[in-house]
Amino acid sequence: MEFQNTTVMVTGAAGALGRTVVETFAAAGATMIVVDVAADRLAGAFGPAHRQVAVDVTDPAAVGAAIGPLAAEVDILCNIAGGFAMGPAVHETPPALWEDMLGRNAVSVLNMARAVVPAMTARGRGRIVNVAAMGALRAAPAMGAYAVAKSAVLRLTEAMAGELRESGINVNCVMPSIIDTPANRADMPGADPARWVAREALADVILFLASERARAIHGAAIPVVGLS
Image (cartoon, rainbow, N blue to C red):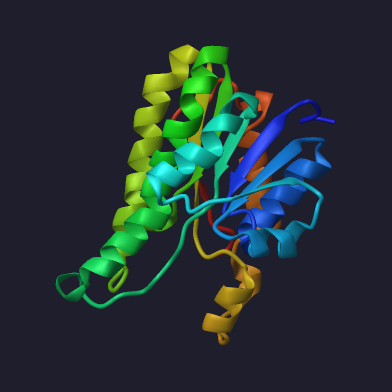
């Protein structure tokens, strides 16, 4: 199997997309380390099937303590943790919403990089796949904080790719549009989810970017939009 003898760490693992990414890598033979904010979320999602790490990925000290000791085992890091929130107009957006969107989407990537990249650099190999969004390219009204946060993910991906490519580490990201999740179906009951991005399809692109087949790809931002 393609990812046999490979250890993959997935953040946001208990979420809808995270679970699909974990299942897809596991089916391809990978050993999984699943990361989410709460132990009960992980236990409910996976039981004893995979090694579980409960940590708030927006907290740099907590990430260092929880992830640092495991970093030498990680061949592939998938930063799936994130979040979405509509907001008011930019000038009315409260500081807490800015901090929440930046924290969950962008600061989480930075904290995980601090914890994992030094060990990858020491080994001379690794793959990192981040999740940006199409909103990183063009913001919509009432989505300023989210778009800024996902734009930060895109720019972090580009910067890291340039910094780490000579160390044998590939860093890339995906940019989905609307993902077909239970939460999005509940929030948009009048929409046609068949036009959205299936989680399995997005996981396949993430799997490709983490694979040896993508060894020459650095700093890519892959649009994954389905029919939306």
